[in-house]
Image 1 (cartoon, rainbow, N blue to C red):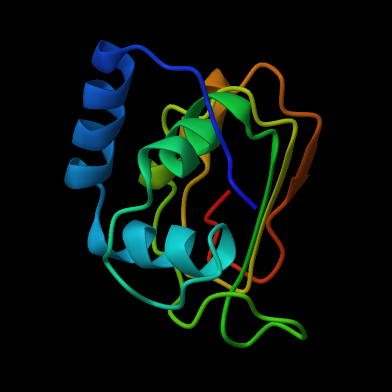
Image 2: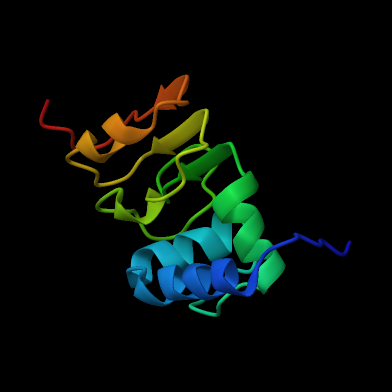
Length: 121
């Protein structure tokens, strides 16, 4: 299936820069959970990248010890979610997350699942 997302050259440039600056753990997590590529650092196509940044409202990351895992290495922070402020559903389970304060800026978030993490409060 071919995906076409209308984007300006500046938007694509910003999206590529965002991907370039992502931590390795997040690149691998997106490639596994969102793109089905496996744990690779390979950047997604521009259309897939723009769809993630402006069009996605639901994400699920289940760590390697989850009943139905979709990533092989547990995430340690939520930095890779910025700037996905259109999220309404987020599930990050069986990870090593200790803090979810970054999510306070996610005004559209209605459903949050963070079971089996290392949250401090």
